[in-house]
Length: 361
Image (cartoon, rainbow, N blue to C red; front, side, top):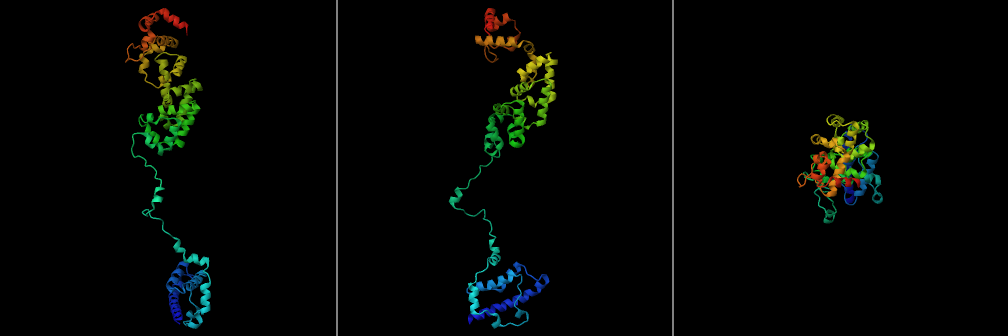
């Protein structure tokens, strides 16, 4: 009896709520959204522990058809407890009937929105030790070694054989490398150098001496090589010059032309002699010109003569060209003195000994 009274009370509550919801439902639409029906069911049904599944089943059936309208008897203003209340057999059948999967999903759809874990959430010690923290990038350092583990560019340059400890001694060279991307900026320069003739095993040494070429415009580099070719330097000769004088290709076409013109106009060298000289000593094109002017006689002398006297001094153990050491021999003494004076004053030997030595070459 008490169960029947409670059921009648719930149906009365359902009727009042349905009438209250009827007016706004007519203004909006003939069907109520699933969310509004969900709110309606939660207000109308306050289930007890014994019949919770029965009333939720009835509410879900209203949701599935898109209508939450009250029974026909409620529309007429009449209500019959005997005609609307389910019989005990129907109650048992309703309780035994499982809730459809689709309706269950609708009922519990809001429960799926689980908030993400908080950054302040405590974790176990086992989970904590499995966390691998990346080493922090130093904000300031005096050596490139601290950045190798963080920079793909530096790591690949080291793999090529670049000595970063030497590079960082050059003005702003370390900062330059940190701003370059290997694939975008460096790779094309490496391919260019290989095309010029720099061997793979020389790339590391070349870039150690001249890291600044990595920031040069590729088209400008190609133009400088084209200029050397126009001056009748062969591919093998250009490769030799670039390898021996890494800074050569940093010089613009105008500077290269002025340097070659210096040997012709200032020193009076022929085109062939100038070409032979810069192939053997390409750093003459990139170094200072004052020492060249001061030792003009050296470049006007035969290369073979210099070589012969140097080898004779080496044989005697007197090839000392360091000004800070005793028995220093200047370049002018090596070249400009006559053979007799050279042998007696510089080599400390007779002219006959020098002539015998020359026959052994």
